[in-house]
Length: 336
Image 1 (cartoon, rainbow, N blue to C red):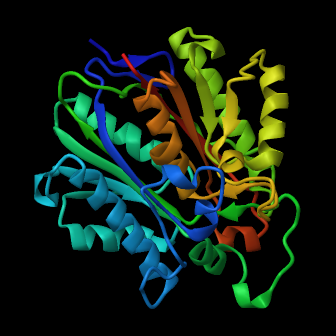
Image 2: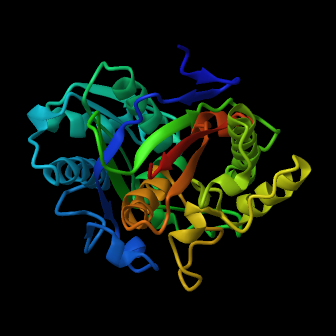
């Protein structure tokens, strides 16, 4: 029996259990509205390391270790780690995997990597290939600034459409075990969309069409309406991208409000200087592995659609004047 339904969606016949999760965030994220919901809030951005890059890799490694330790497992008992980040050659994930000694698949989907890793992990578990798989991602404000924008020391003025890359790491452990909630019940794999946006300081607008297309495909493939879910969250469109997405929803005949929001908007409060909102792999990972899964475990949310969004550009292509292709992947989490 085919697990694929419609054009882009997979329905899991043995929905993997998210048996544990963990989140580590930076000081700014800890000062936001969800500080008490994260497993660990760092005192600074170096995390007792010599470089920001080493700090990010350590955050990712510790998120994985904390997630598996909640189930009293050792790293050697985890069959597969699926992980990625924003940096060249996904070095944060690679170096974390070096220390963990778990069979490893590296992922890159820009800021969509959390959903990409989770849906891949869910396929591995539902397909019977593995029984225990960890999906994890990270991002770091200062490593991303160094690679994608300008050195912090340069003091470049940010535009109102720009976003603050979240310093955060999140990990979820998926298991093939009976009983328990929440579970990953379905996932929709996104298509690369490019609407001609070339402003790297306005990635929310570039990603919004991809998010809307994936959400519409998810509903069409499963014959569902937006009110099926208690909450639909995109990954990091920010305020500008979220506003555009809401306009596009109307054009597509979708009205997901009031149960639609964006992790990049939710992660920070209005008093924090983050311009259009949060971004990065850690934006969706922090919200999912912090407050959202906590609310699911408490029964306050029973059906959640996470739609992580990614801008698939590089500094080189931006310098060459290329437009920004984007993608979004959707993962449905349910208490069943």
